[in-house]
Length: 493
Image (cartoon, rainbow, N blue to C red; front, side, top):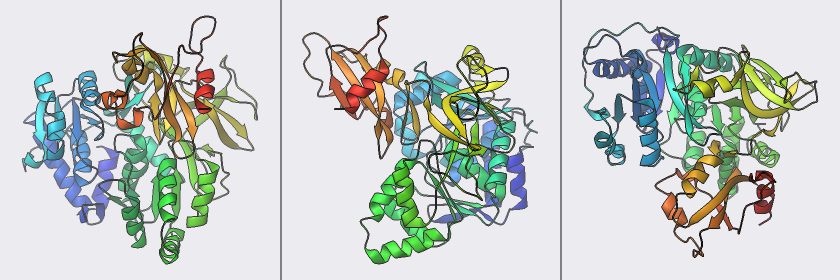
């Protein structure tokens, strides 16, 4: 039995999900997910790890679909609701998905799938009340594929088993002291581990309530907070930055009301990108809380966290979570002394199983059973501090990790672009923003339609926000673009 779903039987009458101003119990979640599982099986005994994609808004349907796929023996593939069709098509093709479950609002977006692929169409509104026997699911089975951009420039499918997910949940539930009395607001995308595991799965494991909003709206978020029910909140630095900006425009009386409610929260977390100290300090003035910073990746869930109880140091990510082994190594793979920078490597049941159908990339990501994160940190007085990535081709913006090489590959397809270089440059709100240097083809003097041209080829968060036209890119003697020099040039614009 899948541990996460099995735990729900302890809380059948409690509220599991609040969405669309409606409460749904754990019992309703179990019933609806069983209906979805029976519909997927269509008389088969077991999906046997068939890939099932789904695209619905965050809320009760999302959770029921995810659980239904798992209960039928399938691998869940949540699609990003903000991605263009090209990105969705890539995931469907890469996974050879058998079916896609969708809500009517996304019917037009995904309709080309049914002519491009032989794939089963399952509108969520048409899934009925079929009944049958559900298979017994081994915890070692593959459970989910989430896509992350790698240095190859092509998104890679990160495969986690039910064992991996359980380990990720257990470490956070223990370390952050989750309980059934908790109530969390989830405003994060549900195709990333932050929103799926850190919030949704941890809440449901604990018998807590996970509340959803249809979209990010600072006014609605503060209105929810003012009700006094929510006692946990997790977000990326960009969201905290936007909430601070909105809060500062409110009248004094409303600010005092909100600050009073925030002060009663038991935990507030920031992650997915480096948290500027200025943002941490401004949020502390508003809420009275020092945001808890933690460290993780799609490939491992969370691995390091500042203490729930105890001193939190701005700029530090804390100590290893329960059940997670951490080491820092130099470029030769040898251990480094405390105070010396090294690459973070991770070992534990939380670490992913494989990159989907990429055995070479999987093998290259491990050494002697340790996962190579690509992040550089230093251990100081028992706490880790992130220094940056060992590759300038990964950009962290607004909680997303973005491949510069993927964007460059798309840009070079524009008829007016001869060559290009993409880098991340520091930004107070976003952490980093995507910036592109363009080399135009002969006879081309400007690209006024470039952003519009990119809009149906890349998700909005991957589209460059800053552009520069150059005669050539900075290169070394081997002809390779020197990204650090390009970053410096674009940062000074």
